[in-house]
Image (cartoon, rainbow, N blue to C red):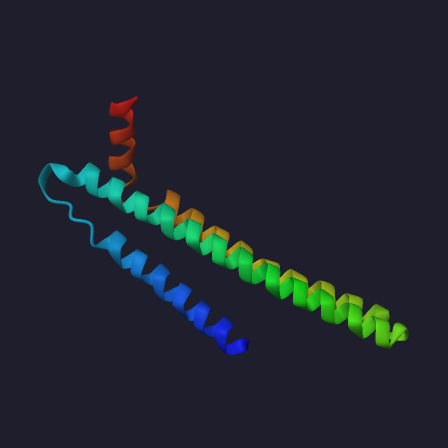
Length: 127
């Protein structure tokens, strides 16, 4: 099972990196700066969405496995429930922090890109 999980994780990372290179490969020639910025924005949104989905899926799997093992440990040795609970909560915070880091990177990808002024002008003309 670990091999399947690691191959799917590597495959997901490869897809996200490929989407990132497509975002940077957008042509910005002449008056097409706004269109290239919109392409960059679209690909950034897709990459951010896939990144958050994968991070949430992996984080929830990790948290579920941690909780399952902690409950099994407490069931086998009830006297160690205090130590197991403290360690569990620290571990869950660490796993959740990885998902939050992914959220921060996704927000940076969406809102802090070089063509933000061109996209804002494009949307101002439409509205």
